[in-house]
Image (cartoon, rainbow, N blue to C red; front, side):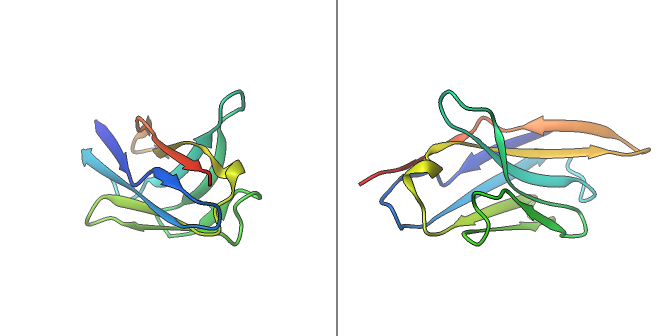
Length: 119
């Protein structure tokens, strides 16, 4: 069983930067897809960025050009570097790891880390 712990959230001024980290523990497979999602109050959870085992990345339209996702399988970690933050980026950010294959199926979420963008 994989467990995920996020860190790096906080209060930042508009235009600022943050780097979120998510560390996996337990049985982690490098074949998984790792990603970041966010959910603001009253809104649906949305994709921020994801990265496959082959390091193919995908970004949500609202963050394209402002975020970079990366991973290190040896460290069981995925990062989300965010720049040019806007008040509308304020949300709880959740780490996700999943795999659906002939070998294994799992879909795990972290507890979330809050990002608040405000002056």
